[in-house]
Image 1 (tube, helix red, strand yellow):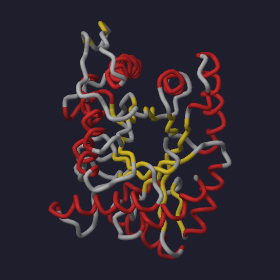
Image 2 (cartoon, rainbow, N blue to C red):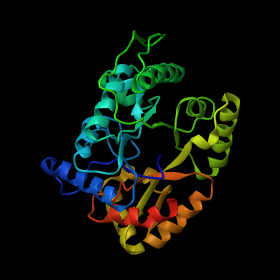
Image 3 (cartoon, helix red, strand yellow):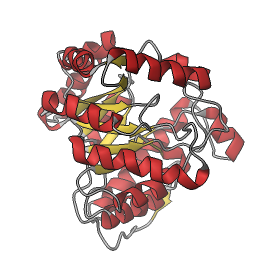
Amino acid sequence: MTRLGYQIPNFTYPGVPADRLFDTIVAQAKEADESGFDTVFVMDHFYQLPMIGTPDKEMIECYTLLSALAQHTSRVRLSALVTGNTYRAPALLAKTITALDLVSGGRAQLGIGAGWFEQEHQSLGFEFGTFTDRFERLEESLHIVLGMLRGERPSLDGKWYQVTDAINSPAPLSKIPVMIGGGGERKTLRMVAQYADESNLICAVDDIPRKLAALDEHCERLGRNRSEITVSLQTYACIAPTHEEAVADLDAYLERNPAGAARRDAMVVGSPDEVRARFEDLLATGVDGFSVNLMANGHLPGRVALLGETLAPIVA
């Protein structure tokens, strides 16, 4: 599971037109593949998120993109961070993940969550519903998707989904790891304990001990071996060969994209030594690894490789 994952959340790059956009994304994935990352993630969204940019900024459908990146990488797992459960019927999602596993030679991973971006749902016609609705849908979906990925023929006459002897042929080449994203202590972490191999936490650093304690409690109550679950932390970084270059990269990004300031305080910025020291501190909180994005400067040649070479030794 994820010890060091590289997330690509931003597809708006200065001086990069549409006909060179995919090449720029591929370059990041290849650097991740070669520098110590174990997973490459892309977001499952259709509009850019408000804390990164405006809705009209470039956003590529994730599973088409992941399947294409599979042809340019050889080692990393490939995953959404995370699949919005509301965007696809569960049986379709199971078939999609299986197709990704086949075209990648057994490197697919299922990252999934309940969905949260209301504007995207309302604008594009996806049913949003209430918070409770979305978590009920997620749990029903997990029964169907996990059954299909495991070679079963699940049937469900649920409140939200109905399937009968759902067949998934061909089967995945590998056992698909399952990661649930989020930090909700009552619902999300309970589902992690019940269904998942990994929890990708989204929370403030000070909240990590409480989240881990909640996960422990769910595992104990459900009879799950807590050691079977990896916990990764979603993080933001801006690394460069020197502190001054990293700050300059971030300043340039914020100048062209002021919305990114919403993540400024959460971002680890600096030279390799500075970034390594901060991530060592984060490891001391009890997490097992990280999903990291370089939304400010990942498009610059060498930055992803520098991050991988910096952090891979401390999570090995």
